[in-house]
Amino acid sequence: MSRHLAHLNDVNPALDLLERVVTSGFFCFPAMARDPWLDSLRKKPAFTKLLQRVEARHQEALTAFERLGGDRALGIALTNTTLESP
Image (cartoon, rainbow, N blue to C red):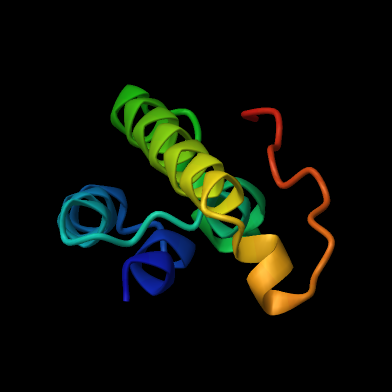
């Protein structure tokens, strides 16, 4: 819903909802960093801070996954999932 609000340029409600979503546990950094529907939020300092928080949580999850052998358990090879922040 937040991305739809952002796409419609309803910036403040989009940011408020996105903050709630991240606080509730959603932190898919690659999606948030690349989604063009979030472009209306990118110049907002609140979005920048939120994206930094999401990136940190994403990295923590990736580190734990690697440390616990998740790639071996699933039989996959990980590629670098870190993106430069826009």
